[in-house]
Image (cartoon, rainbow, N blue to C red; front, side, top):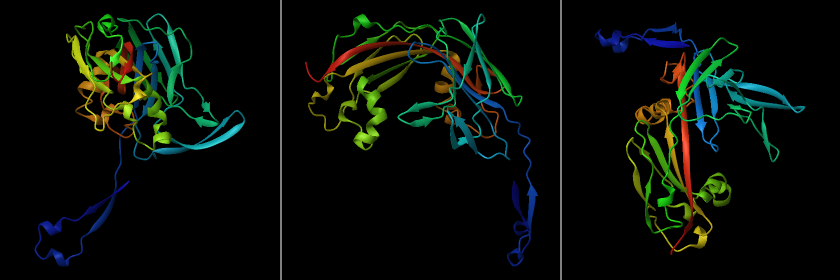
Length: 315
C-alpha cells in the first residue's frame, strides 16, 4: 500500500501558491499478525443448537474474497468465499469429562440449491449441557493460529406458566412472571408462531410487506437480575381492523438466560460499540474478547424456557 505525502511548505512559506507541491510515494508496512475471531455458543436448549464460527483477521496484503473450487458429489462448484472464514480449523468443545469435535457440514441441498455453510456443529446427539457446568473451547488451525475459551452455563429460566391465560386475545393485557435470577441477566421476547414462517417467505409472497397479523406482537426486553415480571400488551397498529387471520396462530413467549460472556458481548458493550457485536470484523485490530484467550470474539452460553397459547381477535 502506498501513501501519497503532500509537502506542507504552503503552510509556512509566502507565495507558495505559485510553487508546485512536491509529491512523494512511501511504502506503508503493516506489522499486524492475523488472529482468530470466534463466535461460540453452548446451548442448554433442545431447539437452539450449540455452534462455533471461526474467522480470522486479515492483513493489509490480503483481499477480502477468494475464488473457491469445490468438487461435491462429482459436481464442480466455483464460487467466491470470504477469505476471513476459517473452514479447516480443529474445533473441540469439552465439559471436562468428554470432548466433542465440531465440524462444518460440507453442504446442504434444498430444491436443487446448494448452500455452503461456515459454521461448526457437533454431529452427535449426546451433547447435553447442564446449568452450572463449565465448558471449554479449543480452536487450532493448520496455519498455526489458536485460541481457547471458557463459559459457565447459566441457570435454566423458569416462566410461571400456570399464571398465564389459556388464550391470548389481541386487545387484552397480560402479566408475565418468572423465577428471578440473582446473578444472570435474561431476555424475554414475544412473537406469533406464523411470523417464523412468513419472515422467510414474505419477500416472495408479500413483496417485502409485513402481513397485518404480525403487527404489534413481536417485542423483547432485557431483564436484570432480581426482576420477576412484566406486563405484555399488543402495541398500537395503524389500520387495525378485525381479522380472522389471527385464528389458528399462537403467541410464543420465550425467556432466555445468559452467562456473563454473552451479556457483555451482545448487551453491555454491544450497544455502545456495535462494531464488535458482529462476527464479520475481518480486518485488523485486537478487538474485544469475552471468555476467549489468544484471540477475539465471544464464547458464551444460554438456556431457554417457552410458553405457548392460542391467539384470537376477540373474546
